Amino acid sequence: MARKKKNDNLGELLTGILILGSVSTFVYTQSVTGTIIVFIVGFICMLAIAKAIQFKKRKKLNESGILQVDGMSGAEFEEFLRLRYMAEGYAVHKTPYKGDYGADLILEKDQQKIAVQAKRHKSNVGIKAVQEISAAKLHYGATEAWVVTNSFFTRAAAELARSNKVKLVNRDELVEILLAKKAV
Image (tube, rainbow, N blue to C red):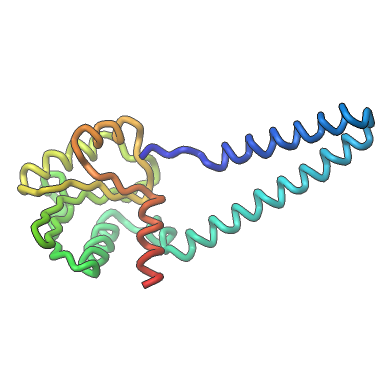
C-alpha cells in the first residue's frame, strides 16, 4: 500500500544497461569513439523511452479523471465517492460532515455494511485514518472498513490496516476503478 517508485527502478535498470553496453563496447572494440557513440545512442534511446512512459502515464491519468479529483475539496471528494458507489448499486448514507465518528460514508449492499473514510490528500495518508475507520467500523456495526484516497498510504498505515483488516484504496487503485467505470 505504501508507494514504490516504479520509474526509479526503471531508470536504474536503463542506466545499468547503458553503462554495461558502453563498457562492453569498449572491452570488445578497445575504441573510445565507438564507446562514446554507443553511450550517446543509448542515452537518446533512454530519453525516448522515458518520454513515452511519461506520456502514457499522463494520458492514463487524464482519461481516468483523477486530476479533477485532485482539485476537489474533501467534501466534494466524499460526494464524488457517494455518487460512484451509488452507481455500483450500494445504498449510501452520508455521515454528518462534523462528528462522523471516523466514517464519511456507510455503504450497504446484500449483507455487507461498509464504513468508508474518504481522504483527498496531497501527501500520504497516515495511521490516523486507519485508527479512525477501525473505530467507525465498530460504532456503525459495519462488516468492513475502507479508506479511499487520491494519494498513497504510509508504511505504518498499511501495516496497521493489515492487522485491523481495513481495506486501503490508494491512488493507483482509484485510477483503475475510474478507468474501469469509463470502459463500461
